[in-house]
Image 1 (cartoon, rainbow, N blue to C red):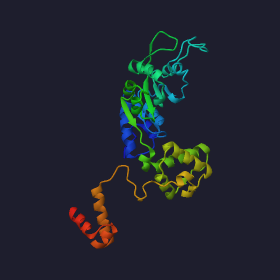
Image 2 (image 1 turned 135 degrees about the vertical axis):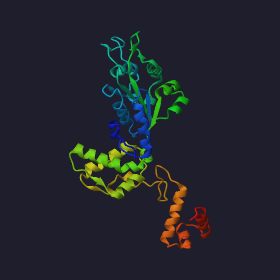
Image 3 (image 1 turned 45 degrees about the vertical axis):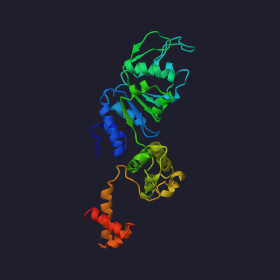
Image 4 (image 1 turned 30 degrees about the vertical axis):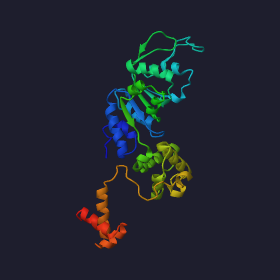
Length: 320
């Protein structure tokens, strides 16, 4: 298990699955540098939380952390909002104003949903990323601002580059270090820990007793495909906490979409996140079958769904 104790900022990211720990290791190293970082991952995987942990672990921890949702920037004001403007630069510009870049001076600028940034602004952002220079709307002078950029996206920027919707040069400038956050279905072993965390949060927020999930309910949560990822799990925990404070949440209390979900794999077996050693698994199953049957090879073969000859071949293969 990876030890987060040496970097308290990352303890806000709940979970210890191998898929997550690998990202955390890279993030901790990158946080100590001053390079720009690109965080990729599906919606609801915790990209903003990761960005906050990176900033809090950097030398800029006590400096501004400015968050921009690129998808929500109004097209007609996007340049002004980003880089500021001079008085009289446009109708209604009654005074000189700083943009997000100036507000983040000395700190970190978090560009969420960077894939939604208009092409017209991408070229100006590229110049800023390259040398820290920007130009206020309505000004003929350049100013240099010291800002670290952390960008995030739930889109495939490679595909956007192929269709001309995202600048290749900007992509490589922003992704000096790339972090890919795993989806919740890639870290199912974290679901119980995350659920407990969110139930405790909900109880504290609503000043109520903390509820808990039964083992059967947790098993169903682990089977679900979680299209909304961690955000969806948090919403489920808030839902049951509000309706059943202090209760043991049974499987039938889960939202209908989760309760009725049937995974495509109907075998009853789930591949662990870390994978398996097929040879070791086969040896272990053979030994279990022989143990159950008291060494009777014919019965052991039947337990494993094998012919006697196939079973004997595997015994010889593994020197059993």
